[in-house]
Image 1 (cartoon, rainbow, N blue to C red):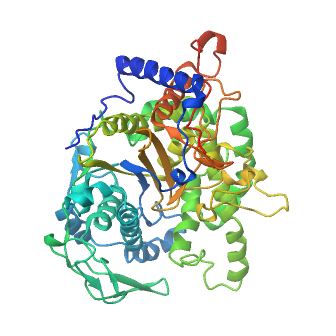
Image 2: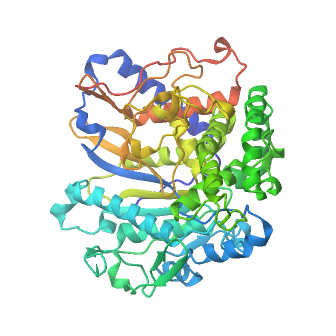
Image 3: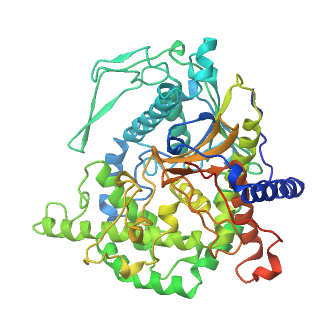
Length: 562
C-alpha cells in the first residue's frame, strides 16, 4: 500500500528542498549537456501513450446554488424556496456518507463544515451531484478502457480499487465534500450492477440506495422520478473523504493562514495599476447594483476595492441562473413588468464583462509571486513528493489515485503556477477594456479548446463547475523515464512554465506537438519549476539577478522527441 508523505508545512523541509534542488539542477544540466542522448517521444505521449503510474486530480465542486442572495429583500424568501428545491435534502449526504465517510479534523471549525446554517445558498444542487458522478465515470473510463495499467489484467485483477490506491481530500465545505463523494460514486461503483431504466445506461445510480432523483419542470418545480438503488455489494470499495488538520492541509490557504493571505491580497489591491483598472469597472458595478441591490451591501474581503462589489457574487448571478434556466430577472420587481424584455437584454449584456473583470482581478492576484506561491505551492509540492514515491514502486503495486476537492480559485492558481500556456500568453486588460477588435465582448470556454485560441482573450477563462485538472505520472517504457502529463477537463494542455527566477527567455513550451516532436515535462522539471516559484516568492521582485541566481542555472527543460 502506498504511504504518502503528508507535508507538515507549506513546502518541503529545508534539507529536503536543498537535496531536491541539487538533484534537479544536476538532472537538468546533464540533459542539456547531452542533448543527443535525450529521449525522443512519439506525439502520442501528448495524450494517451505510455504507462500511467499515478494520477492526481484537483477538481472544482459541482453546480451549486448562488453563494448569497443579491435581490430585493421582499423577494428573498421566494428565491430561497426556489433554490431549496434544487438541492438534495440531508439524507442524500447521509446516504453517501455511509459509503464515503467524511473525516473532518477537529481543528477545522470543531469538526463541522464551514457552510453549515447557510442552506440553501452555496449548497451543491442535484445537477452538481450528477455532474460529479459523470466526471468520476469519465475518469474510470479513461483508466479502464484506454488500457492504462494493462499489466494488471494478466494477473486477474479487474476492479478499479484493486489497481489503484485511492485517497480523497477536501476543503471544509459541504459542497466540496459531497462533490468528492459523488465523484467517487461514479469512479468506483460497479458499472454492471444496475441499469437505469429511464436512460438505458448501465451504472447510473446512487450509492447507498433510496436517494430520490429530481427532474425539474420549467426551471421552477420539482417532480419525483423513480428511485435507483444500490447496495454495498455494488461498490468496489469505500473511500473516506479527509478534511485534514490545518497544520497539514494544503488545499485552502485562505482558511489556513487568513492574516497572511489578507496582507498579500491587500498588497496586490494597493498597486496603482489595480486601483486604476478596478476603478474603471465601477460604472459596470453601478449598473449591476441597479438590478442586484444586494451587491452593495455584501461584505467585501481584504478591505474592499475601488469597484466596490464582490465580483464572485456578481458572476454567480449569471452562472447559477443560466445553469438552471432561471430568468435573470426572476424573483425581482422587474419580472413580469412591461420593460422586462429590454431590461433582461441589458442585464444579459453585462454577463461577459463581469466574468472578464473577475478573471482579470485573479490574474492580477496570481502575477504576485508571494500570493501565487502561498496558494499553489503546498498542494503541488505534496503531489510532487508523492510522484517521486510512485516512480519507485514495483509493477504490480497499487498505484496512487489521489483526489483533491476544492474551488475555482485553487484550480486557477495551479494553472498559473505550472504555466498553462493559454493563461500565460495574452495581453493584460480589465475594467472598461473588455472588448475585442470588433468592439463586442468575448470570453473563452474550455470547450472551445486550447489549440488556436486567440491568446489575447484566452486568459479570461474561468473554471466551470466540476472542472478537473489531472496530473498523470507517465512512464516511458523505452527508456524507463517519467514525465508529467496535464489534462484539463479531459484535454491535454501545453505549458509554458517559468524555469528561472527572472523570466527573460526562460519560459519554454512543453506538452505540445511541434514538427512531429513531443516535448514533455519531466518529473525533475516539475520539481524545478516549483523551486523557482518559491524562490521568486522568497526574494520578491526587487532583487537583482546577480544577487540571487545560483551559478549554472539551467535554461532547458523537457524531453525533445520525434
